[in-house]
Length: 320
Image (cartoon, rainbow, N blue to C red; front, side, top):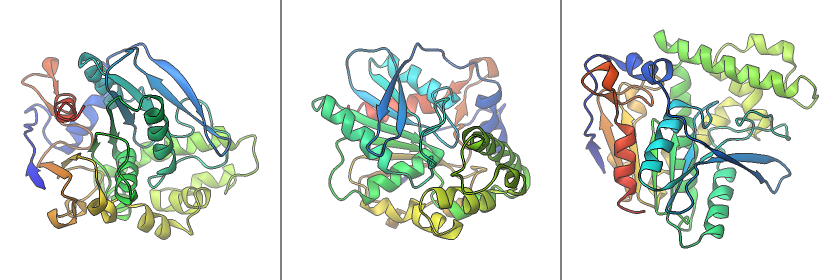
């Protein structure tokens, strides 16, 4: 089901770029004490969870976007909102995103569903009677939708929320190579290259040498030379085709809310799925403005209203 989102952008943040950049550059992020837990994975690698300090109540697993972490503005804001509800929040860091390179050569990608499935199952096994929900952003949202849609049995969670997911990865790569959106590509590629250098400066099992990174100037090149070989894809075309979440939306079983802005500068409006592509359990709320993981309302800059931190808990409260 597709509906209009009950969101009105702040008048002082006109356009998609203002909405996208304000919380990154200007927001004073909530600071919560977090407890880190390291999970050892079956393949010999590890990933880290950052937990809020609550001791009871429903659990909300938060999955970040490309090169994000528990320090990302959207993760910190949602953890604060979760805590106010009396729930527990846990940010699942993708491999290599928690401040320490992971052990294996592989890291994470937009189609990486195995670790999500492992963490959800671990949390469920620990507390089978505790309500569990998952909220994912951007690249993490694509991975979550893919996992939910291709899982043939009901996952052990009550609900899911996805924000600003790149439903079609090839379209996202094209959009990020155009106009002002190239700024986001430049920033994210820079972070990916720094992570690669930090990890492989003392290893020899990387797919390319460090001196070759400078020649990779867009996502197509990086995903073709680095992401694809590290994660078992034949090349960038194979990766974008198999990992994109749009083709899996009809198979989603848990109640799922997708929040998306038509002016998202990371993708074009024609990437948004149609009603016919959605499972009956999926509610897609669209708004004309909101940017990428922005959705800032409020009358004045000093009283900014981070709408996602109201809408997401309100949806989850129906199931948790």
